[in-house]
Length: 205
Image 1: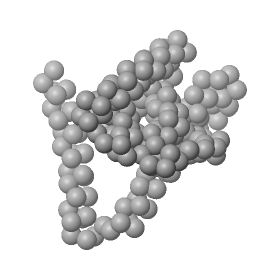
Image 2: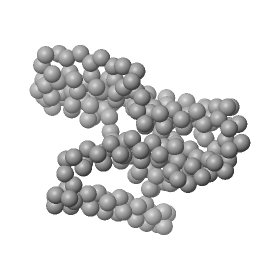
Image 3: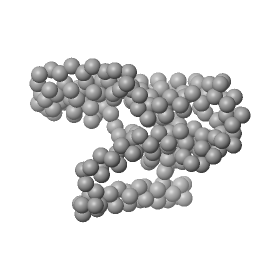
């Protein structure tokens, strides 16, 4: 137990040290707004999708369909609780109109991807990220639809958000769907035929 706690503590110290380096770089002018934007784009478009795919390629077997369904069910249940709590909290705190949407968004949707995946990988190992990927399917669907509407609802003119299928075609969503596809028959056959290629690809990720 003590050794496990020590390992977790070491990993968290390393993560916070990296955050501290970023904070110092920002304060000293090494990183500016343009750099922040490009770095965020790199994380969301390349490194996070790579982490998601690596979480599948580095495990011996994926969760069985029943377990995956249970994980998604728990995710749906959690948001069914978060949404009314967020609405009640904004009324209880008397958040003014024009600000309620963003407060509700913050209460409903945590930073489960941008920092959640790396923290999970650092503490419990990269093979556990696949469970977070499955859990976050509901998050990805809601945050880019209901979440976008919440933020836009802060406009006093009542701007209506029109979502397109293109809004869902993001690297993280594609990587998420790819992890789900790993359990299909066709992908299994391809994996058996191209095991050396997959091993190499996993090492690169």
